[in-house]
Amino acid sequence: MTVEVQHPLNDVDTQSIGTLVAAIQEDPGKAATTWAARVAWQGGFRSQARVRGFDPTPSDEPSALGGTDTAPNPVEQLLSALGNCLAVGYAANATLAGIEIDELSIELKGDIDLRVFLGLAEGHAGFDTITAAVRIASAAPREDIEALHAKVVASSPVGHTLGRAVPVAIDLA
Image (cartoon, rainbow, N blue to C red; front, side, top):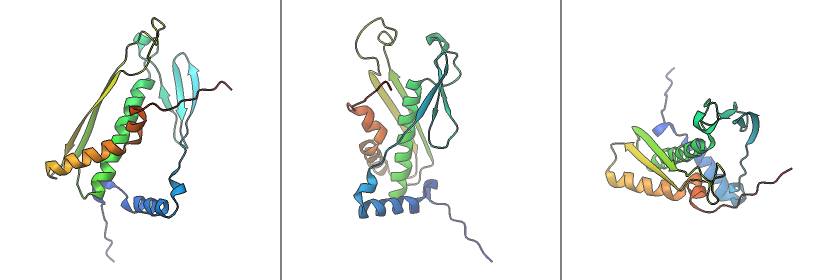
C-alpha cells in the first residue's frame, strides 16, 4: 500500500479556508464573529490573559516602569498581535495566489510618550506611530510580492483596527 503525503503550499490548510468561504457565501451572517479574552490580575503589574482553551498569556512591565520584567507588556503584545495578524494574511493570501514563501519576518516598532501614562501630562497615552518592516523571501516575481503586500495591508483585521478610531467601552461591573 502506498500512502501519498501532501504538503500544502506554505503549510496552509486551503480546504478549511475554502469550506469557511463557501459557508459565508451561502450564509453571510456566518461572517459576523465575536472574539473574547479574560484577564486576571496577578499582583504588581503582572496579569494573565486567557483565550479559549489555551494556556494563559502573561503580561508584565519592564523594571524601568515598575514591573518585574517577567513577560511582554501590553503595548509589546499589541505590536505582536499586529505582526501575527499580518503573518496570517501573508500566508493565506500567498497560498491562494500560488506564491511559495521561503521566509517571512516582520519587524514592528511603536513610539509612545510616557508622560500621559505616568500622569505628568494630559492627552494621548497610546502609540504615536507604529511601523512594520516586512521581509519576504520567495522565488515569486517582485510584482507578485508587491500585489500580495497590498492585499494583506488592505485586509488585516488588526491593522484596520489600529488604523482607525474604534469605539471602546470600558464599564465597571
